Image (tube, rainbow, N blue to C red):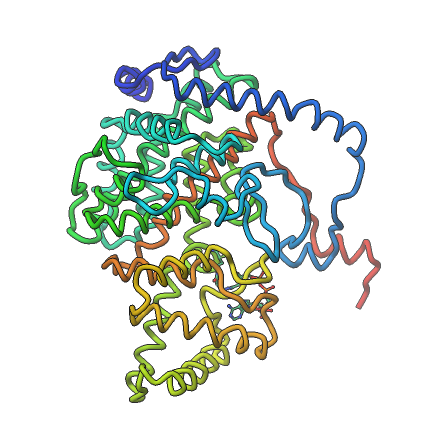
Length: 478
Ligand code: FAM
């Protein structure tokens, strides 16, 4: 009952967009344009998918072997996910565009050098590069959707938590608190949701979540740095999505805003099988609304083998630096530094620890997300001490990990570099880094959820078996 009352009062603040059959009416040119584009894309795809299924529906895409069943299902093609595709050598492509291509064609902020994350969101959702006007209108729409009542509910939830709780846990709880205003859940509960409008409701919630959750993330940052959840600034209509988020955190340096635009654009998506994307789409397949689904995805992102690696990387780098300093290594003497880093990294590997920021389940080359961050550092602060250290680690690590002989990919992933950019701009709270990853990741995984509902995909339910079953099947008797 409470939720419906809250929904009504929140709805009165918003412009109107028709949600077919859901009984909710909003109107906004840009959302109407977005919906029409999505419907057109679906209409283009539908006959192709039909033909594909008719002609090749029984064709095999890959093999599930005993090793793969015990090995995290690597290389088993069992999902269709539209926003992005990962090539093991080339890296990520967002709707067919590589990162350098996105940097070239996506609209930028006035005076900024980097693509806008909201433009990336449009690309991920529609497959089209937005015009500057579309990107600006989408940002304005998101600002309108930053409903104060929903955000106040999340603030209350955060204020009940210890300030020492991990920021990712707080952010995930904050997103769950926003769920109270889910249009998808509300329409479903009142019998107004059905297979033909699930996608519109998912889109509505996704836009609302993208509009509101950065403020929640900024509150988490303020709790960490000031002990209070009040954000540093109200949303500024003249600012883009990424700059507003940084501003709410209390970061007013324009160079940092540009860094944030890059950061929030490149962490958005990494095809559908990674833990955060797969968790989000899996949970959403049960028709859990986008907030419930994204919060679940965030909990996966919070693991050290996934998003938390960007926090772990800083711990590793600082450990290396402290050990070098304690042993009297001259950090400006390259040969001395390389020797020491090599020794300390072997100590870590021999202690059966992983080198965070290196290796990948799919990639087999340097992650282009690493490369573009390196280029940003080279262009903006080539003499930064921490950057130089990370760059030296990059020179030696592939060789060390190859000699170690375990990891299938000895090259760096996105997390090996992101912390250095943040440290340079004084964002030194490394336990917060995965929240930034999460703020970005929602743009990709929620686009995936919208497309799953648009294509009417069913609940996910792969088959599992027991070891007993396998032993019997292959007649293994000891
Ligand atoms: N340092 C030491 N050992 C490593 C390693 C690393 N960076 N990467 C992989 N290995 C080991 C791995 O632990 C495994 O050992 P066991 O056989 O003893 O279990 C072996 O090499 C084979 O692993 P793999 O097949 O090459 O990798 P997986 O596909 O199983 O795992 C990662 C992929 C990313 C989880 C793994 O490379 C790793 O733990 N890297 C460090 C953590 C990290 O940077 N994660 C972030 C990944 C990032 F892209 C993201 O999601 N944000």
